[in-house]
Amino acid sequence: MKETIDNPDLDFDRLHIWHPYSTMLSPPPVWPVTAAGGSRLTLADGRELVDGMSSWWSVIHGYNHPRLNRAAHEQIDAFAHVMFGGLTHNPAIELARRLVAITPEPLDKVFISDSGSVAVEVAIKMAVQYWHARNRPEKHRLLTIRGGYHGDTFAAMSVCDPVTGMHEIFTHVLAKQFFAPRPECRFGEPWDPADIQRLAGLLAENHGRIAALILEPVVQGAGGMWFYSPEYLKQARALCDAHEVLLIADEIATGFGRTGRLFACEHAGIAPDILCLGKAMTGGYLSLAATLTSSHIAETISAGGPGCFMHGPTFMGNPLACRVACESIDLLLESPWRERIASIEEKLRSGLAPCREFAAVKEVRVLGAIGVVELHEEPDHRALQRKLVDKLVWIRPFSRLVYIMPAYNINPVDLGFLIEKMVEAVGEL
Ligand SMILES: *Cc1c(COP(=O)(O)O)cnc(C)c1O
Image (cartoon, rainbow, N blue to C red; front, side, top):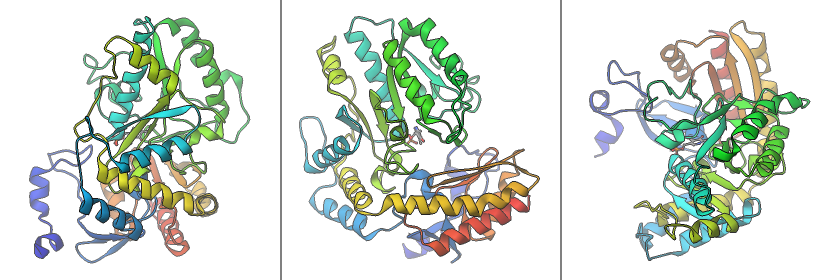
């Protein structure tokens, strides 16, 4: 067993295993990991990489954290899983208690599912069932903004950016939704009322057919790493209220502190009607997500047609994942996370600034513990990825973006190294 762990069979991997958004014809290289701790990944050849990705927003406390490990072991020794139909358990109850306490009012009803995409499906289903229960079944479509990413399942995909989400391939499968332009007013810059006019127009004209507006508050993640004005969000909230349209905030990427606030909605001081959480919820240990809504919406749905909410995954409320999520949330709230993220933000701002001088660079932007370098053109991804690994950092560029979002407790030396190597690699493009 030891041998296969230390010498992963990469030929088998190439021949038989899909990786995310990958190809089975000449697949790009993958690097075998044999250990991970703190902000370091150990490769099978013994090299240690400093991790800049937090495994896609999720590993906020670093890898192999003693408290998360202990929580997982304790829960496994008790029971790893039981079905959630007709049964319940402390890990789910305690997780829901924490989520209700830390998310904006009036969100107090929690649906626990197994991945971000499913949390989005559940949110959409809630919105549709809500209007159905109110005898407005014609309000079943969604409004969103371009540049978004909400997951890879079909309803989630229907509200992803139509271009990067490849809607043309799935034209006949995806539900047709309404799209407003991406907000152009940047985070921290003066507000321009013209920015929301298209969204306002779409709502005024089509609110009779729209169940909900869904968006990623303040930070659009996988759709382009774009930071927009909280004022847009504030006004979108007001427009939704005026036109009887629900607001779904997808905080699967932004939740649990990443933008400098516990939830990105707090930048605008608003509460959504439905909130999606995932990614960092278990500190990156296990796949888990949640969809929260208000008592009003939950009770309206429950009083409607089928007399229940129509969703129930096999691994709903998985005790092991819920137990680790409780520990991860406690760990976060007990830590000086605000100061840590402010300090990472400052280092990203000063450290990435030199990239602005490079011809290949279009823009550098930083918010919270997210640092983004946008290039003018798509780089040769395979070459750039290899170069970054050779420089002993794990950074995974996509499209025209090279970005990092380290663990909140990354040590200053590792963070400095990460930034230095990122700047070096971009400078060599
Ligand atoms: C990652 C992500 C999702 C999808 O989550 P999965 O766990 O990958 O299904 C949805 N919305 C946003 C904003 C995300 O960043």
